[in-house]
Length: 341
Ligand SMILES: NC(=O)c1ccc[n+]([C@@H]2O[C@H](COP(=O)([O-])OP(=O)(O)OC[C@H]3O[C@@H](n4cnc5c(N)ncnc54)[C@H](OP(=O)(O)O)[C@@H]3O)[C@@H](O)[C@H]2O)c1
Image (spheres, protein in one colour):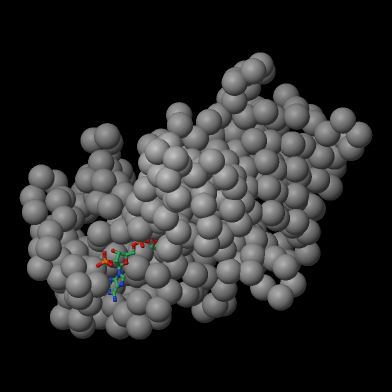
């Protein structure tokens, strides 16, 4: 039995922060006192945890004093400023932003994939990977262990909740405007997503988006496969929550569809949907709200006996962010989750 501990949640009002509150409660994480942090403009407001209204505060060194865990989901600049302060105060910091992901000093962790990198209890920073990276590796790691992963081509179909609470709000206003025959508002997003597709991430001079490059770099670091070839294309789709991915993966040895399905069925945190037929595949509407990553449409490549095609759907706010972060804290402190979901 683990003694309850003080926990700090930075970014408690955001899309990930709100999910974090639900996950901590549903898994009965042993929280003695939860301190909730948001920007100075939200200070004095409240969020609800375990039926109790908790008052929001702005970040300060005092907030982290005596806490065992600090869960960050407030973006990179806040993580860079306050993550080291929290770690110095003795907190285990689990950060959802990209601030520490590619820094070799910090582990980048999906517990089911490289859980051995989670430090034992005590201060330090652990980076939570990008949501797209997490769900893709949940599907590919068991297959990599079986056949040796060499090359991945992935196209993503990413939900708007991945862009944060204000983007969700703008998308919903766009949808209402489109239905009313009015001009959709565009201020947070770089264009209209309602009834449309967008690559809304910052782009590099190479033509790749920031999101695509995160998938490449993070996958290589987590799998410790510097030579892995990955070709990503990321697209935002007019879906509220849960990302989908079309994944083509080539391995060092010949693969079989049946063995791939058996292997994925045995993987923790993965559910296999082997139905075949129109509409018979994992869908964001069904997967939204679930902890498991759903893999369907498992096909051996028609021309390449060493390649598989997969359809992978995961809740970007849960396994792609909040759940993965809480699982890291659970492992670090030896907490066995109980289900109050
Ligand atoms: N959404 C996803 O699916 C997802 C998945 C994986 C990782 N992430 C990452 O997680 C982080 C949060 O994403 P999100 O989607 O939850 O964003 P979000 O909805 O925009 O929420 C941002 C949070 O940060 C807080 N914040 C902003 N400025 C702050 C400040 N100066 N001090 C303290 N808190 C401040 C906000 O508080 P206010 O309400 O007061 O502004 C809010 O609670 C980002 O780094 C994102 O890349 C997101």
